[in-house]
Amino acid sequence: GLATAQDRERELIEAMRDEAPRVEFPIALETAYFRLNERESFVPIAAKLPWSALEWATKRGKREAEFDFATEVRDQQSNKIVGALRDTIKVSLATDHFQQLQQHALLYQGGLILGPGNYRLKFLARENETGRIGSFEQDLLIPKLDAGKIELSSVLLSSQIERVSDTSGVKRKSLGTDPRLKVTVLEVSGERIVPSVTHVFTNRQELYVFFQAYLPAGVDGSKTQAGLAFYRNGEYVSETPLVGPAETDAKKQTASFRIGLPLDKLPPGSYTVQAVVVQDGGEQAGFARSYFAVRPAP
Image (tube, rainbow, N blue to C red; front, side, top):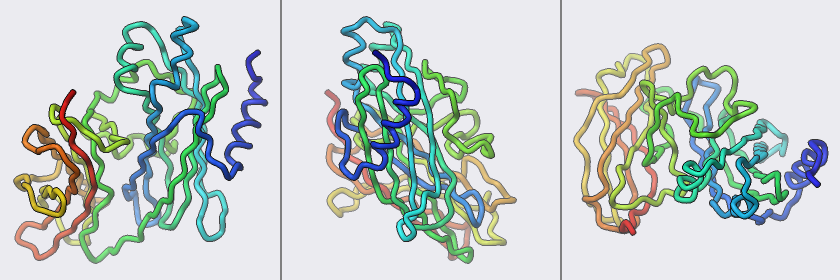
């Protein structure tokens, strides 16, 4: 029979304490950091579960699946838990939606607020019908920012932008993000960026690159510009023209940039993308990078 809520809870806690990874289904995880103020950063957590985690459901003709997700963040030095998230998500398996899932895999999105530091993050997913558990662990560094120069957030890559109202059949009991965040950083002018977890794109997709610049006092965000440069095997390939910010926040001295480009111009291979933010006529510039791969579309 089905495990009771207490059994499920105990199983998750045991799996969280377990040194050995749980590999009953694979999980890929992506984190980033975006500064909220001098003491805190928002850390979005995106996890991708393969469609195989749901194969049993088709066999049994189920209309719905349920997953428990748990995240725990420990300070590397003290080993103390500094952040935790729990979500239960129901996924609709109605026929049309199910075919969509088969192509895309399942995506979980949550988020935490953390101060600068060195952390270890552990993420668990449990499929509640079969009780199978997958886990993922990674180090997480949130740097202290230098208030005297232009500093950049993580560079977030995506091939998918959705209207904020779109929940696509996923019902959440609890929202992963901290209740203090009415709108998360990933929402720009009514649209939400869905982070790529694998960083693998096809040459038929559009690449969206999102990042923020944190500016020293006296630098006007609306007078900053940003561009991207692409490198393949260490060789310069191309760059985008400089553009102004998508949004600025004068109170927080933040400029947000979102640059989209079709990938059909980039030959298949592995890339480094470097984001640069420059002050108009100023000598200040900030840099950050990310990595991705382009594959031929099947």
